[in-house]
Length: 322
Image 1 (cartoon, helix red, strand yellow):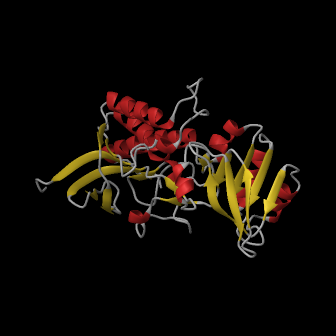
Image 2 (cartoon, one colour):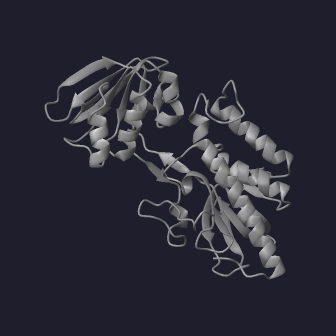
Image 3 (cartoon, helix red, strand yellow):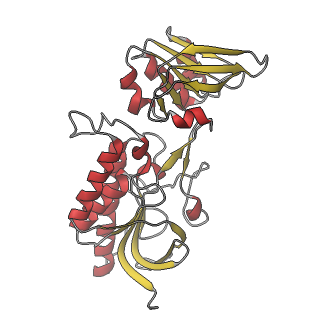
């Protein structure tokens, strides 16, 4: 082995709830995990001001604080947390094989097991005012943040099933919901469209795009434009929810791991196993249905247990279940 190549029993790629929970369990199993944080240490929760729906925080907690605490817990059990970005991978096809990883285009690692927890990135509109008010009323998760706007007027951008589902969810707790659809029709299924159209406090505006999010420190309103007539209109809201999709952070794994048509890693059955032996996926990188911190943490636990059992089977030369 080259002196510049490090050998690791368990490598965790990603540092959100899935990655840190995997690290906690892997550390306690004496897998001596090394975790690379990626470019956004802590993942999407570092852009969330308040987390009110994670068990164990009766008063709620802000996202960055929660991620720091998860990191400290992982480190307490022996996880080696490192700042760095995995830039290339070469997975082995053999049971018990060694996986080769490059970090920051320079450091070479050989790993017996790898847990991928790179998450997914919410798509935003790209408006400067939208980015400035992220955490101040602009959110990409209605289920996460909708509670804070109970009884208030909000808007949601999107036209698919997720947008329709989140719009009706918001309508149950908010005073009024305005749904902004860029085209002249929704992409959502007929059943979801019917649900939207039958919700009394939910208004749909077609051929409508966001021109600017209004407000200083927090969202106070929105200016929209009709993309056919060019007419602009302003109305007051306190929350703007963006539901135009997520992009899983899986580009460097393409061509090696089985993925669906949108790039989410496919895992086997109820496990976190991928199509490569010794490679596991947890969190939003393989979950496009729930995308919650608590479900990500749960699959992080599963991935560490799967990795531990895989290594034990390799060591004892037992047959690995597919």
